[in-house]
Image (cartoon, rainbow, N blue to C red; front, side, top):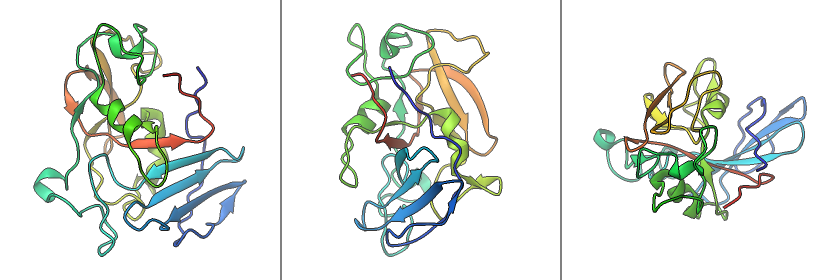
Length: 210
């Protein structure tokens, strides 16, 4: 399986789909061409393009406030979805392997992933087949040590699911996957049937084997 994590990027915000500034060949663009489904386009120094919805999974963008508060309220994090990494506390959602990603249509023994199924089936900004953000990608969303709330409004500061099953150098077990804490910038394992929020990403040069 070919898989590319978001490479090192320097963020620069721009509006209405115009190119942002570049640093070492990397650029960031905020695209409002679809006003209710705005995305952040990230282009790395190798011209790999990544598409990130500005809202967490389940949230809706509000063109009047420029925030992800078009549905729900602050009590439910504006409609943010809380999903299971896998329907069973086994390796059946990651092909029976410890060091693997959750992948659509590769589940074993009737198991399934609510989080990945949501991203894979998401039709957003003209794209489909997103995947769950990986824990090693979240740091790209920070600015001056905190989440860039201009680019990513109404994002939770607590625990979120990672698309990855294991943390390098940390012993992995079948019943757990990686949870990332946004505020503390820490990683840990938790049982796969626990429900956490998550976000989706689309990498145009990335091949995910279904």
